[in-house]
Image (cartoon, rainbow, N blue to C red; front, side, top):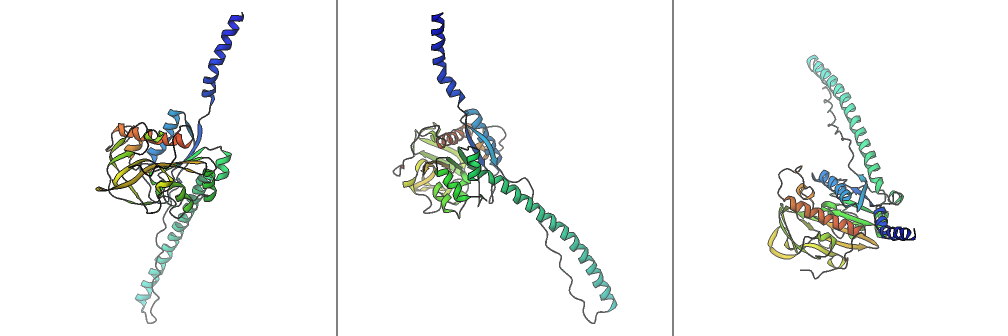
Length: 338
């Protein structure tokens, strides 16, 4: 009997670590794909892929999404133009014609007023949905929902965050922030965000092949890709002068030449990580194309191979896990990476 009890005790001690690991809940993430500027066609693919990576890796769960309102805004046509006043010496024929024009004007005005009312109602509904969507990113909700990180996937423009400064403080207090592609084309007038991200979109040329160089081969966001990563086609970003300080970031992927001119040599940032206070910030400017996000047959006119799609997914998953504190990697600046 003692031998049986001893065996059971040993077995229990052996299984305890495994049970503890399996009992750990995935990190909690909110994904934001709201845009007030250009809206990428790859956003639905990004939403699907980010959910899939969380489910497959069991590293995180997308507990909610801040998405674009579903209401379609109806545009109001131009108001009808009232006919000119009737001349004082107008004859009967002119008076009759003018009377018909006024009658038509009044009918058109009534129709326009109805369309204008519907347009205003649709805009009000859109604004209400947008406010409700972005309220998910209020510091109060992030704390209440025990959110560990927020992902901006191809966001653009000035997003109506209920508390912009509070959001940055939430990140700096020890949470994660991940940005993909046009997250760098977001909040142009908000220094707090641009400083946290260390990027402000300047422009881009046509889509081109990209021969990327690893700034840190051991970082999770390298995705075990190695020293170089060759993309068949992607929209490569340029950033405004002064918005990116290499002394404040750890370069993960970069180009050794201008994004659109291989003959113009020099460092061009592509992906990096950094600490913002106690928060972990990961950004990649890659993610314009659908065939980077998605590795299935759902993508039409594929230029990047399925293998490259899987590499991109490994790249962003590694960055997300790092931002969540689930994978170790340095955030120390490496300005000498060449």
